[in-house]
Length: 106
Ligand SMILES: [Zn+2]
Image (cartoon, rainbow, N blue to C red):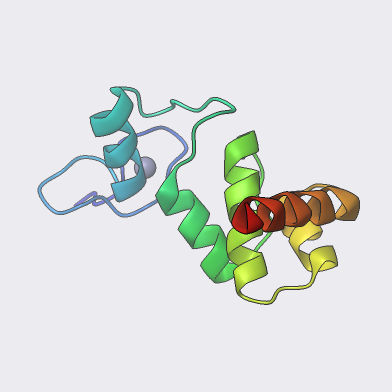
């Protein structure tokens, strides 16, 4: 019995009584498109998974990179490691962090 998500290239287990995994179900229910991504959108499941597993990820939207970096920073992950995981320059991570600090201070 096939219990994998029906989306091509996805090897996640599907949600019970569904034909797709939780990530694709979220995208379908939110945007009606399992492949929907654009720079200003973020998939909270992706972000949470990357922050939790701290593994390098490709194909992130710009907003997802910012959110992952923020989540990793909250977990005291060093900037160099954050930069490696989200695939940006270390200076970019420092810039995001100072922007966040300014927002919090405002
Ligand atoms: Zn899937």
